Structures are given as C-alpha cells and as structure tokens.
Length: 186
Image (cartoon, rainbow, N blue to C red; front, side):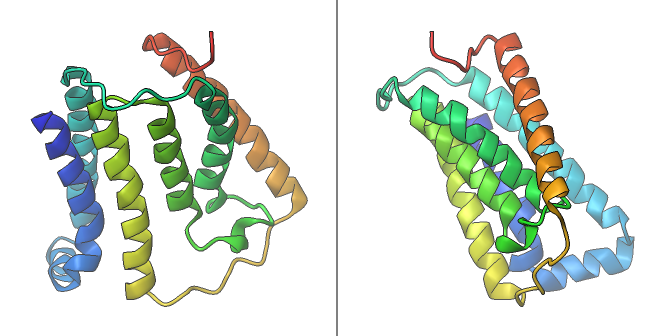
C-alpha cells in the first residue's frame, strides 16, 4: 500500500506544484526552459508506474460490497467520462459548456470505479484521484481567471468526439479483459 500512496502523492504534488508554488515553478522554467516540463512529465510517468505497482501488490481488504447493478452504471457512463476527457481538445460545439471537461471526465472515471470496487486499495486509489480532480478544479478556479469560452466547433465535431470515445471505450474494454478484469456483467 505504501507504493500506491507514494505514487498518489507524487501525482498530486506534481499536478499542484505549479499553482501552490508558482514562484518556484517560474524559476525552474527560467533556468531550464522547456526542460522543466520534462521533469514533471517524468514525475507523472513515475507516479503512474508506482500507482499501478502499488495497486497490484496491495492486499485485498474488503471495505464494502458494491451492488451488482453498478456494473451497468459504469459501462454506460464510462463512455461519457471518456467523451468529457476528450472534449477540451475536440472541435465539438459542446466544448465551451464546461470550464474543466478533462478534470470532470477524470472525476467521473474515478467515481465510477468507486461504485464497482469496494476493496481498500481501490478506495485509496480512486478515492484520492476523485478528490484530487475536484481540488485541482478549485485551485485552478482560484488562481486563474476564467478564460473566454470556446465558441467554435460543430455538430460534426461532436459526432467525431463520440466516435473516438466509442473506439477508446472498446480499446479500454479490451485492455481490461487482457488484464483479467472483465468489465461487463456475467
């Protein structure tokens, strides 16, 4: 569990560093240029590796038993989570409706995983990431002025986003099956 917690701490710290210590982050950029982004990219990649290893190695400790119907909920709303995650980079006419579509999709993803995983490692992993996404939104809102909403996009862009989301959903489903976690009932 310690490796999982270390990975989560690194994830949260690397993401919040820019807003918690803007002066220090600016000095790093001054000295290193774009190389400073590489340090954070490496820290985030390492955090994901630590989270995966820590999650896999964690002992199974049951905290709660999720109702069986939540699998259907996750299967349906994961498509929305993926679409929200991609919305901020899309050419959809829905793009300007949310300030934080990627973080909203991330929070939905984490929350959905809490509805189907009741073990301690899942609660720690997905619960921390769920809370982090909302903290990140609040910190961004407090430290940055609201940008001008995106006004471009089209219905074709929205359809493209949906198709890409469905393809990614199929890929994610295949990866889960390959890892031995069947994401559907039965």
